[in-house]
Amino acid sequence: MRIGHGYDVHKLVEGRKCIIGGVDIPHTLGLLGHSDADVLLHAVMDAIIGAMAMGDIGHLFPDNDAEFKDIDSMILCERVAKVMDAQGYAIGNIDATVIAQKPKLAPHIESMRENIAGVFNTDIKNVSVKATTEEKLGFTGQELGIAAHAVCLIIEK
Image (cartoon, rainbow, N blue to C red):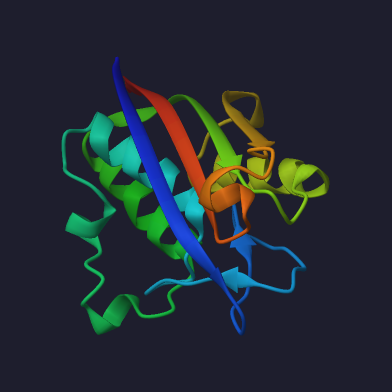
């Protein structure tokens, strides 16, 4: 068994989609980044890559590489899943928390869990996604950005 932790943050801006956990969430602001800026999937990938001691998503998918400009993070997850499989690992479980004052994420949590479970070929019972606010404190509380933490356990197949 190996464990990993991931963290990501993206700024909220006008003119971008707000994609979290592979779900396009209606909101007046979206997340800024080189890819689609899916903060949740980025944290999950960092946790998995970290558990394999292979660096982070920036190592595998550099933000100065045009191949990854505006790429769907679900595609990046597919690539991480292939690396994990090639290394002989499978998901034990994933536990993630998204920190956002707005938009409200509760109506989208199950879809996020389904997306993550599907792309990493695991049962949905192995994927937990939670959302919280910071009571209007800090950059997330002031609606300047959204952050996510994720931990995972990977197991040898």
